[in-house]
Image (cartoon, rainbow, N blue to C red; front, side):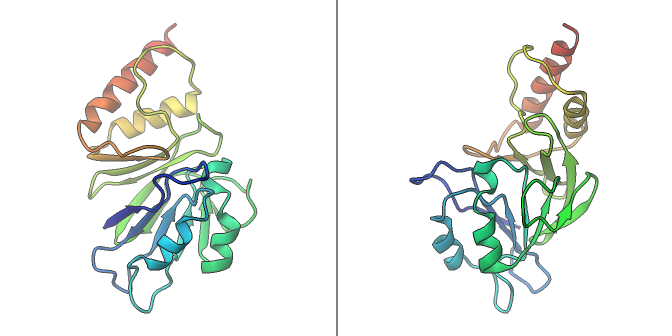
Length: 199
């Protein structure tokens, strides 16, 4: 599996946009965008990306949630590439399949589990690959450093679920990925959320 962030900075405020492809770009790999952001500057980068011969450049889009900075470019992506679009709600025009959590989807050459994680938004999801320990987190708050705040029971349940996984890398909706001590970070977050629930 190859993970490429198509957006790191630009003139438009945007989320990260991850292109997930297979290691060898075979015909059975599923070229996937995790979020599409709102900056059209990703389009020429995407058109130059190595996505395999005889394959659609973007076969599917999975939105971690429907906020504008993660999803505004969806109409352009749909028009250019005609992908299947997954999201956890029909809040956006162009969504083909609504996810409820628990589904298994192929991204690149790996299988990912869909984890519903309402909290940042009602339609937030995370995507987890057990084989490589990769988690796409969107804007789900997974680095909580103090026992303050209140959290929806559904998010607490999602956090407990995520905390049971063996995670080696976390790709967030904004900023750089976390590539070390992921399980420790998640344990601290889980402990702080548990403490906040007792207040």
